[in-house]
Amino acid sequence: MSDSYFPVGPGLGMEENFLSLDDILMSQEKLPGRAESALPRLAVYLHGKDNFWRLSFLQGSKLEIPLWLAKGLHDSKRRIISVELPKIYKEAWRTVFSADANVVDLHKMGPYYYGFGSQLLNFENPENPEIAQTILQTFIARFRRIMDSSQNAYNEDTSALVARLDELERALFQVGQKGLNDFQCWEKGQASQITASSLVQNYGKRKLAEVDG
Image (cartoon, rainbow, N blue to C red; front, side):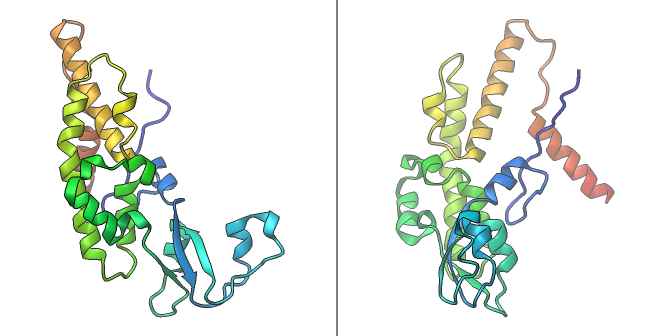
């Protein structure tokens, strides 16, 4: 019996995959910003019908705006809105990450740290090179520990291990756990063969589609 739903992976880098549930949820994360011009009839969409009396934002108003809307309104020529960095991507936190990325509770600070941070690079900011470098180095620094943990927690409660991981790291942890479980079953003669990870299979299909295209 085939699965009724096949998970779709998130996009890569600054690109979003609009068929990915993770990317859809990530795009709802809010950015601090400011209205650089009056935004008539926008407040009701950001604050809900309970605030219908406030239909517009005046120029200079502070905003909390979802990523998808910020990307749609961002225009360097027209200066409709400007966005600010969430605190976890600012210099103070970048210093913490460079000192020891493993001590940070990424899920508490932002469940889509890597994806959301990559999307911030779509906005013009002089700190973008530093942000990109920190995201990359954070992933490298935490990756080995995540995979080591996933390979040394057979038939154990892993809730404490994954509580501090962002959603991408949790997916990697689950892949590692599945690989370990499949190998243990194969060793015990409970599986006929070891199959490739679905992530690897999907990546191969994507590469083939690119070649055919």
